[in-house]
Length: 293
Image (cartoon, rainbow, N blue to C red; front, top):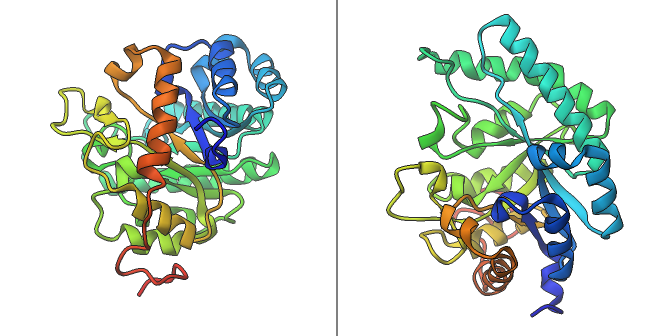
């Protein structure tokens, strides 16, 4: 399996092996015969931005995504200014790491608010400030629509179509979208949205959706094949839309995090080959060239 050429497409997000210090994470990904990883801001900051970038480069790895920017829905002027400044720092980090995109989790409703439309408008206003800044630094912002159960507290974008609408005013080199199976598997319009996305796809992330949903819904992610998601149609759809980049595995799950990290990576590799890359066709409703029927 280690020499399987299909593994060149696999990227391991740092959250999948939560608690692995940056040097061990980089060494572990390289030792597993992989070529890509996804970073998070906190471990990078703990080890040092420049040190992390050098560590990754010296290991011959590439960064498929840096996570995360966003949380742009505050109404208080001081809080909004602070959020914009933090996002500029995240953009600068992404440039230093040479990451392919900065994942944007846009934020939920401010405390006490029920103004969902207003929150989305504030995200659009913030993007108008951040997108040019990102473009000047060669960074692509990747808007991530989250499952609707996170709408109030994490992301007022719940569908890929909403993310595409928000990205539309900006050049695709500045603002793209994330296709994340965990968040989008339920959406009956997802195939049309993926086809519509085309070169807006900036990141393709996978993990499974576990049932029953745990008390902490953030931990409802699992290894591919352990939940309810049919992965091959997603692979077929993003490829039909033109995506040739990495498939990044991002798992939030306390049981997975408690396992030996190298064993987690090996499980991810096996599930990637056996479950994600199984034979599939483009789903009904999307033509083979990726154009909505």
